[in-house]
Length: 255
Image (cartoon, rainbow, N blue to C red):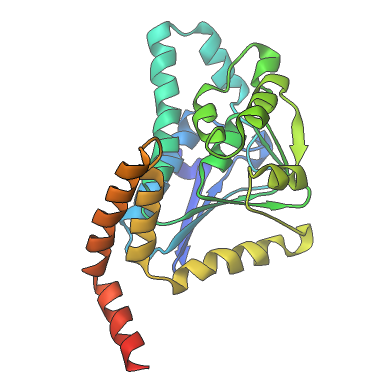
């Protein structure tokens, strides 16, 4: 990996790619190098046919505390075009998670705040340790969780989304699960093993079926009912022609 990507650790073992935000002394706060490293790692996982799922986590006590001080200073002194370019970089990261063909699982310990909360909820699955905290405190400094809103609105109800983005409060992992913001809460002491077991289940599934399912699920956002059905019919026909499906049917018929 490139020099700047050392702020992000990447490894692959037993079909699982592990991406670790590696700035524990800064609570894994987002900066240009970290965002660039995340993109590079996600692209690497997407291109590796041996990878069946990605686990995204933070080194140390926290998952990600949002933008770091240098990033905020950069924002305050930048021009409109510079700020737009900077925002687009984070936008590309969120979109890349959606485009990655295999499931991306966020494993959240400690705090996932602001852009860090957005990063977690941009993932396909969010698993949280019991002590995890989530929140969008941007309004407290006059900022808007703008791109994150597109993700949040697809995860929780309109009224809950409004509450989260306008009050800026931190919520517990249990509350986040109740709202539908995350998938599952696990006990702190068993968290790492629980995440591995959860993500490991994807290694036993058809990679092509999961890839097609992920694409369709996100592709139908905003479609009419009829258009979504048509997209489903088209993808159904494609799925039937995959090697995984044909081999799966053959095994079933032999039983």
